[in-house]
Amino acid sequence: MSKFIQFRDDVICFRKDCERHANRVRSSFPQSKVRPVPVQDLCEWLGVSVLDDREAKWLAGSLVRKDGAAIFYNGNGLSGEEVRFIVAYELGHVLLSKTEIAHMHLSVSPFAAHGDDLRAVYFAVGLLVPEDELRHQVDIVGLSEGALGLKFGVSADVVKHRVTSLHWRWS
Image 1 (cartoon, rainbow, N blue to C red):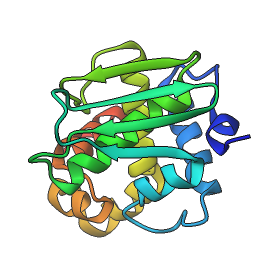
Image 2 (tube, rainbow, N blue to C red):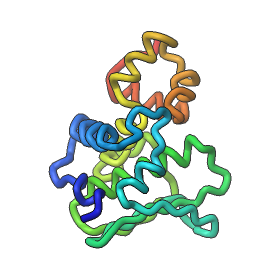
Image 3 (spheres, rainbow, N blue to C red):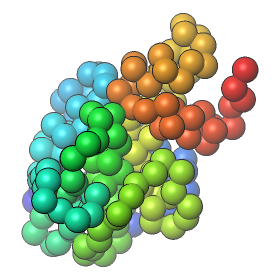
């Protein structure tokens, strides 16, 4: 059985649940202490293929079937931070999906509005920016979007989403 099947969960529905699931997946990964989280290596470890299709007309998507899963994105013009978030976001779709899925996105934002997309965002930010480590880093560098983004390998928008979702205030 593929590892990704082992980590799929049908009961994930709230932010804390998504983050706990992300923590469980990350802590099971042999490189769990590496920062930024090597999300593509994590996908490979889970048995989820990650493909950069530079000819695609869409930005990102994922496919889940009974026999496996794949994440694909169009990396043209994207920063490393954007690719990391997109792959983590799509991994959230793969692991939190209740059924076989196939979907594509023309854009991906850490400020997704609702439903499955919001769950995928919560999973991605929980995976890439663990709350306990974020608290520790804030004690060291303060609430600096740039410094925190560099530490966790994410954009300032992802840091801002993470801080906002934790109901912290920018000083």
